[in-house]
Length: 504
Image (cartoon, rainbow, N blue to C red; front, side, top):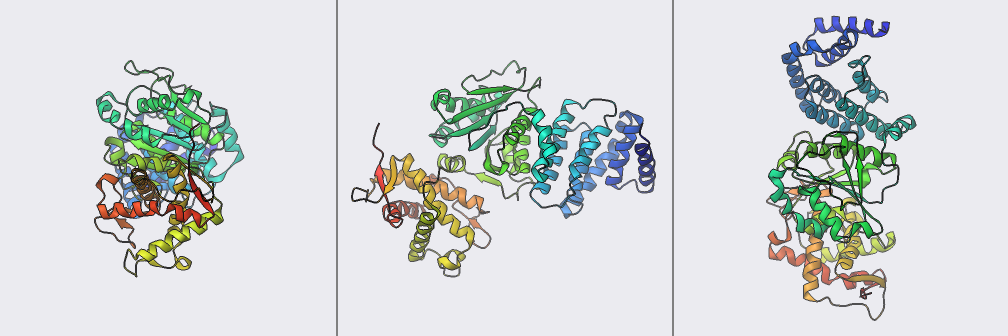
């Protein structure tokens, strides 16, 4: 055994004997004790000590100290105790703190964590679980520091070697037979949300639960014959007896697992990153789910993706939103169970207007809002355009941009202004587009950090209107209808007109 590790073992042993309650000393002591002793049998006798160390690290994290090291240490202790999902959750939080810039770490930080795995497996290969953790750390190292060497190693671990059609949306959620009826109830909502979607959807690939609903979407959208639409799954080599592969997906990728494990979602992330897809451009939609879905949600958050969780959908989804480690994450959105909100989350449409056109239309939207004098004058949203907060300006620009997507879904297109442009919409179309506009507004507010509250408070970013259209007060619905009625005039300010899409 290398002399350096033996020397380190002796020093850490002395440190542990001097201060046996320091969890960071304990983690290093155990690492080198296992390495030099080449076994872990003694860990069973230290269970109580490890559990106390986890509580100490948890207290440090709650106090905002020893970050991200408190979470890294918790991950080590959970791993040694055989608590793999708890281990992953701790490591994912540490990774999120690093990637989000909430904690400053040296470039060798992730190598140190990978070295721990190597040390506790002296002269042995990593277990499948530990290999997942090693891949996770390597992926985090690349995202954080962009080391070419890290990318080259990830490339060797990739399975799918082709590019992904963007945008990419991961749909995760309940697939257990016990929740099958509840998950099927989301079918109509998801079919509406993904109608006309072009890009890549990644989901579970079986016939049950949310993965089965995505199979329904693949069939409805005729994914196997539609250009620019891929619906992909990652499956283990062997499926449980009560599961069936869904051949309606356009592509099934087989991992080396013998059952459903964190390997499948981890592998799809490795393939995405190796293909050059940036985490910030990926969205995950979560509905219900068990331990693997819980891992998927936190994995996406840790790597920098936007995660939309359907509120009150149960199990892993409902547990994540109030989780003290994650609930303040800017990328975590609690979505109402509403098809138009989910549609706005997964499918923001393609911008066809220039930044200048969007700027003019955004300013016009805001000036119309000021003319209505909707809120008290001290409210930040009532400032003139030149003094308006940038996030509020962007709200107005996004409203103009998404109007194109709403119009397309309602059967209209945008073109250069002409006498034949539409001036008035039929009432039924106004109602449909107003409902979609509310979905857009909800997602935009959530992304800007707003949360539901019984009373509107602009400074605290609270509003009672982050709810489905059917639950909105009539006077609030009328604001959306009025906005839609004004679109012909709004687009005219940018020299554009609205026209029916001619049947082909």
